[in-house]
Image (tube, rainbow, N blue to C red; front, side):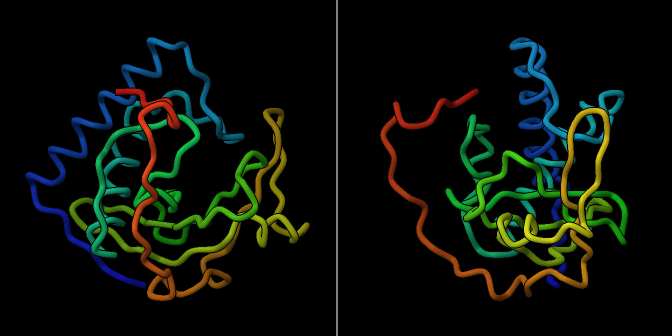
Length: 170
């Protein structure tokens, strides 16, 4: 685990990106991907998610652009970030997550963030005892005790992409 504290200005920047994300999603009439019904707090989720992404980048000494892309990772071009305000929260892996995707769990209590650990999405999908089902689909709820050490994340240079390779939202 790695503790990260965001400054007021860092939280302001992340919140601004989160608000843009929320407004963009509304403009596209985009549906939430989660099998958990959280639509009543979607704006808060977008803001908290951006803060968690910034904290992940800061904690791993990586760049965070804050630009939401469709079907592109959140940090460094290869890390997907999932966040929760629950200190005992699980890492949620969705059916659409690519098996080779590294997914990081961050617990949030702004300005304090805890990078709990990470797991490849495909590894989580092998465990039937982690499956959570709802009317909206299913996901895998990975306990914190099963996550890889956050310090074991290999920091790589973000891949170079042309402007046509990712659909950017902002």
